[in-house]
Image (cartoon, rainbow, N blue to C red; front, side):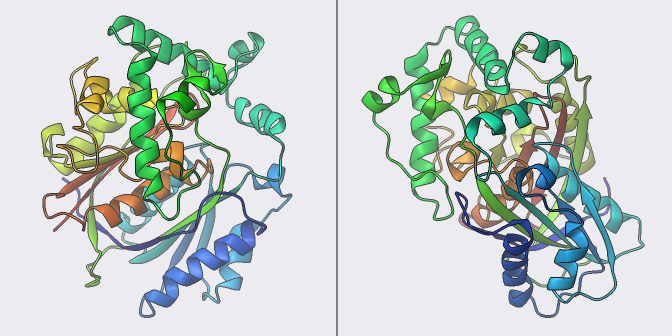
Length: 372
């Protein structure tokens, strides 16, 4: 078990559409966090974003953000691993602190996706696919649809069962003041909505969002009321050319195994989870890869209410990427901020698990948070 690094505090912007650019949204979110923690002096800044050069034409952002925040001379870098960028930035910060070279740092993740039209966004997001996959005119959503189709078929479910998952996520998002999508969907609305790639409809696919998350990390306890230990982290990666459609992501399994081993914990020790659900069935795949539920049972447990906020093991109580929103470079860090909020709402939430996926199940990061 590695020595603990501590999550001191975190901050989320509202997700949705903003008129701010990356620099301004990063400054506004991070400055709120730093003003709330005036004694905290970062020694490094790790910034995450997938494609600011394409979305808003901004470059050299970490240095600009550092200067706007009025921070002293400090180590400043940018991290990019597509849709897991926020999580990989967090893990980079953990490794910096474990090195002993630093004692305190700030992580900021920002994405402003609304400046591009949907078609341009889809092409940009699809650029993470392999040449072979793109050669079949495959999009990220089509990859998600393939996996969803197989999951439903092999485990004896249908689209009515998938509605229960979407309904849960929308109900959760309705209660999240930062969520992009706050809507009480009905079964009629679900089945009358456009199907983008069978069986996934409008209410199964995460929105294109703007948003920012920021977090303060320390190698020592600071006495913050919201402080959590980062008990374990894990990473997994597979080849870009790996065929889609499997009902397990090998990269997630590797990431979960490493995080459990580092934390000295087992799946049954997890009491709440935030799992990557850019497409709603990914929540099911992630939960089963994590060992939280047996293979093929995750959707049944959703229908039984076991993964609802007041259930046996809440999964995506925030609304997940589906309704909180999915600013791609931010979601991995946003999950951590959501867990930090939720874990202090119930005494029984002792250990929280997060999984962020980069690409179509390629470059994935697992994180376990715990109360000391």
